Amino acid sequence: MADVVLTDVHGKVGLITINRPEALNALNNDVMDGIAKAIEGFEADDTIACIVLTGNEKAFAAGADIAFMKDFSYVQNYKSNFITRN
Image (cartoon, rainbow, N blue to C red; front, side, top):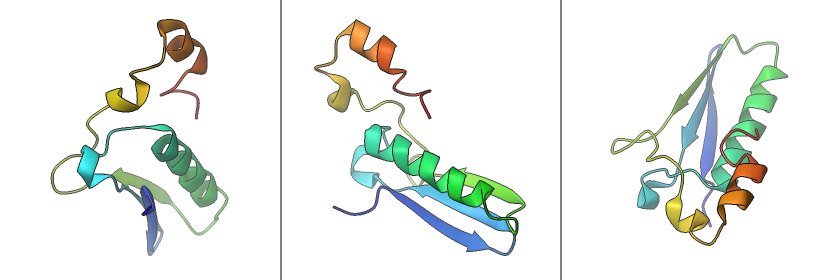
């Protein structure tokens, strides 16, 4: 499986790219964890002055991955803080 979050550095800018084009960059656990890990890495780097989060040509992010969440109950979604936990 390809990395769903890519990182790159351009001078003092840390670039985080969501990389799930087949799902229009819909957010699932792998994407959310990847974004959090990338942010933590850039925040720990004193040479990074700015962090940019981007998608691809078709979409920034389609939102939550409903297919991933389809079997979750309301309570599971609410208690997991799926989108905001990171």
